[in-house]
Amino acid sequence: QVQLVESGGGLVQLGGSLRLSCVASGNPFPILLYTMGWYRRAPGQDRELVVTLSGSGVNKATYADSVEGRYTISREDARKTLYLEMTNLEPEDTAVYYCYAGRLHDHLWGQGTQVNVSS
Figure 1 (tube, rainbow, N blue to C red):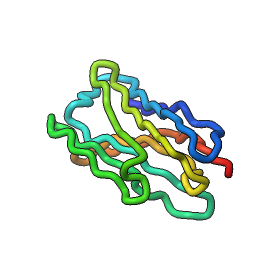
Figure 2 (cartoon, rainbow, N blue to C red):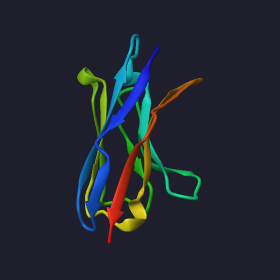
Figure 3 (cartoon, one colour):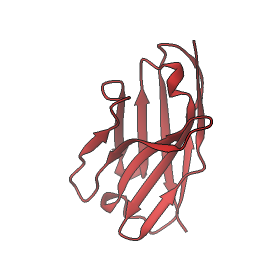
């Protein structure tokens, strides 16, 4: 059974930075084949896409307009870890951030990590 575990959330001031991590535990998990990504859910809102990173060696990143230029996704396959570097944070970025891994009919979600940005 594969699990995704996020970490790195917290409280940061306007303009600050955070780095989220998502570690996949359990075997087998051919992370190279999976599309990975980050989603978020702000208070009172639906979950929305933040960024995805395609698998199978393509590694194409697709960002939401609201985070383009401020967020950077990366992956370290040997460690089965996905990262999200967030800079120039705004109060509107406050949300629970979820890690996602998907391939064919297999869709995995982490439990989420809270990010709070104060003004």
